[in-house]
Length: 151
Image 1 (cartoon, rainbow, N blue to C red):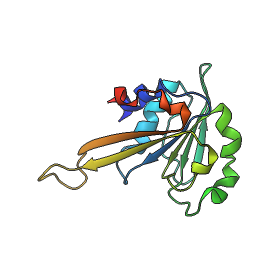
Image 2: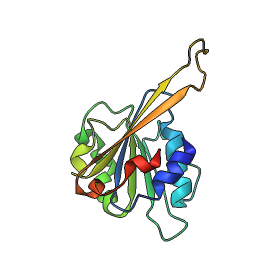
Image 3: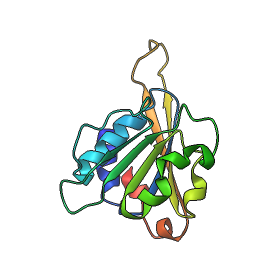
Image 4: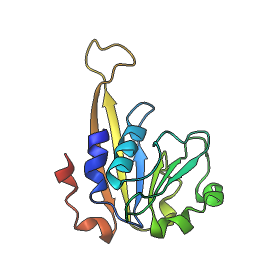
Protein backbone atom coordinates (compact mmCIF):
# COMPACT_ATOMS: atom_id res chain seq x y z
CA UNK A 1 0.00 0.00 0.00
CA UNK A 2 2.88 2.35 0.75
CA UNK A 3 4.43 1.69 -2.66
CA UNK A 4 1.05 2.29 -4.32
CA UNK A 5 0.86 5.61 -2.48
CA UNK A 6 4.28 6.60 -3.82
CA UNK A 7 3.16 5.76 -7.39
CA UNK A 8 -0.12 7.65 -6.94
CA UNK A 9 1.73 10.70 -5.61
CA UNK A 10 3.31 11.17 -9.05
CA UNK A 11 -0.15 11.98 -10.44
CA UNK A 12 -1.18 14.38 -7.69
CA UNK A 13 -0.96 18.15 -7.74
CA UNK A 14 -2.19 21.08 -5.70
CA UNK A 15 -5.98 21.21 -5.64
CA UNK A 16 -6.48 17.44 -5.70
CA UNK A 17 -8.98 15.88 -3.31
CA UNK A 18 -8.50 12.17 -2.64
CA UNK A 19 -11.16 10.22 -0.73
CA UNK A 20 -10.06 6.94 0.84
CA UNK A 21 -12.68 4.32 1.60
CA UNK A 22 -12.06 0.97 3.27
CA UNK A 23 -12.65 -0.92 6.47
CA UNK A 24 -10.44 -0.56 9.52
CA UNK A 25 -7.04 -2.02 8.72
CA UNK A 26 -7.54 -1.84 4.96
CA UNK A 27 -4.42 0.28 4.48
CA UNK A 28 -5.74 3.84 4.12
CA UNK A 29 -3.12 5.39 6.38
CA UNK A 30 -0.34 3.26 4.90
CA UNK A 31 -1.33 4.46 1.42
CA UNK A 32 -1.29 8.04 2.71
CA UNK A 33 2.15 7.45 4.21
CA UNK A 34 3.32 6.52 0.70
CA UNK A 35 1.69 9.67 -0.69
CA UNK A 36 3.60 11.74 1.84
CA UNK A 37 6.84 9.99 0.95
CA UNK A 38 6.25 10.53 -2.76
CA UNK A 39 5.26 14.17 -2.29
CA UNK A 40 8.31 14.80 -0.13
CA UNK A 41 6.50 16.21 2.89
CA UNK A 42 7.78 16.89 6.40
CA UNK A 43 6.78 14.78 9.37
CA UNK A 44 5.69 11.23 9.91
CA UNK A 45 2.34 10.52 8.29
CA UNK A 46 0.27 8.81 10.97
CA UNK A 47 -3.44 8.40 11.47
CA UNK A 48 -5.00 11.70 12.53
CA UNK A 49 -7.97 9.92 14.13
CA UNK A 50 -7.99 11.95 17.33
CA UNK A 51 -6.74 15.27 15.96
CA UNK A 52 -8.94 14.90 12.84
CA UNK A 53 -6.42 16.60 10.50
CA UNK A 54 -2.69 17.12 10.07
CA UNK A 55 -0.87 19.35 7.62
CA UNK A 56 2.47 18.10 6.30
CA UNK A 57 4.39 20.94 4.59
CA UNK A 58 6.43 20.12 1.51
CA UNK A 59 10.20 19.80 1.84
CA UNK A 60 10.43 20.42 -1.91
CA UNK A 61 8.54 22.81 -4.16
CA UNK A 62 5.51 20.53 -4.10
CA UNK A 63 2.15 21.03 -2.43
CA UNK A 64 1.59 20.34 1.26
CA UNK A 65 -0.34 17.22 2.22
CA UNK A 66 -3.46 17.72 4.33
CA UNK A 67 -4.39 14.37 5.89
CA UNK A 68 -7.87 14.14 7.38
CA UNK A 69 -9.55 11.27 9.22
CA UNK A 70 -13.31 11.83 9.17
CA UNK A 71 -14.12 8.58 10.99
CA UNK A 72 -15.36 10.35 14.12
CA UNK A 73 -17.31 12.97 12.18
CA UNK A 74 -20.88 11.93 11.55
CA UNK A 75 -22.23 14.76 9.43
CA UNK A 76 -21.43 16.17 6.06
CA UNK A 77 -19.30 19.10 4.99
CA UNK A 78 -20.87 21.48 7.53
CA UNK A 79 -19.38 19.42 10.38
CA UNK A 80 -15.96 19.72 8.76
CA UNK A 81 -16.11 23.50 8.20
CA UNK A 82 -13.79 24.19 11.13
CA UNK A 83 -11.04 22.36 9.25
CA UNK A 84 -11.12 25.00 6.46
CA UNK A 85 -10.55 22.35 3.81
CA UNK A 86 -12.06 24.67 1.21
CA UNK A 87 -9.27 27.15 2.00
CA UNK A 88 -6.52 24.49 2.01
CA UNK A 89 -7.62 22.64 -1.13
CA UNK A 90 -6.37 25.01 -3.87
CA UNK A 91 -2.74 24.87 -2.71
CA UNK A 92 -2.66 21.41 -1.15
CA UNK A 93 -3.27 17.75 -1.81
CA UNK A 94 -6.11 16.88 0.56
CA UNK A 95 -6.54 13.22 1.51
CA UNK A 96 -9.65 12.31 3.52
CA UNK A 97 -10.00 8.90 5.11
CA UNK A 98 -13.66 7.95 5.69
CA UNK A 99 -14.64 11.02 3.63
CA UNK A 100 -17.27 9.47 1.39
CA UNK A 101 -20.58 11.31 1.85
CA UNK A 102 -18.85 14.07 3.80
CA UNK A 103 -16.57 16.17 1.59
CA UNK A 104 -17.60 15.66 -2.02
CA UNK A 105 -19.11 19.15 -2.06
CA UNK A 106 -15.61 20.65 -1.81
CA UNK A 107 -14.98 20.11 -5.51
CA UNK A 108 -16.47 18.58 -8.61
CA UNK A 109 -13.13 16.92 -9.35
CA UNK A 110 -11.89 14.26 -6.98
CA UNK A 111 -10.36 10.83 -6.81
CA UNK A 112 -12.10 8.06 -4.90
CA UNK A 113 -9.82 5.24 -3.77
CA UNK A 114 -11.72 2.20 -2.51
CA UNK A 115 -9.70 -0.45 -0.69
CA UNK A 116 -11.11 -3.88 0.06
CA UNK A 117 -9.26 -6.46 2.07
CA UNK A 118 -9.94 -10.17 1.91
CA UNK A 119 -8.42 -12.76 4.13
CA UNK A 120 -7.37 -16.04 2.55
CA UNK A 121 -9.10 -19.23 3.52
CA UNK A 122 -7.90 -20.36 6.91
CA UNK A 123 -6.16 -17.04 7.61
CA UNK A 124 -6.18 -15.85 11.18
CA UNK A 125 -8.09 -12.73 12.19
CA UNK A 126 -5.76 -9.77 11.93
CA UNK A 127 -3.74 -11.38 9.13
CA UNK A 128 -2.66 -8.94 6.48
CA UNK A 129 -4.75 -10.41 3.66
CA UNK A 130 -5.03 -9.39 0.02
CA UNK A 131 -6.10 -5.89 -0.93
CA UNK A 132 -7.98 -4.80 -3.99
CA UNK A 133 -7.79 -1.10 -4.82
CA UNK A 134 -10.25 0.60 -7.14
CA UNK A 135 -9.66 4.13 -8.43
CA UNK A 136 -12.61 6.21 -9.55
CA UNK A 137 -11.78 9.63 -10.95
CA UNK A 138 -14.58 12.20 -10.94
CA UNK A 139 -14.47 15.28 -13.17
CA UNK A 140 -12.34 16.54 -16.02
CA UNK A 141 -9.17 16.55 -13.90
CA UNK A 142 -9.16 12.75 -13.79
CA UNK A 143 -10.57 11.99 -17.26
CA UNK A 144 -7.14 12.03 -18.92
CA UNK A 145 -5.24 10.19 -16.16
CA UNK A 146 -4.39 6.53 -16.70
CA UNK A 147 -5.41 5.26 -13.28
CA UNK A 148 -5.15 1.63 -14.41
CA UNK A 149 -1.39 2.12 -14.82
CA UNK A 150 -1.14 2.32 -11.01
CA UNK A 151 -1.92 -1.41 -10.69
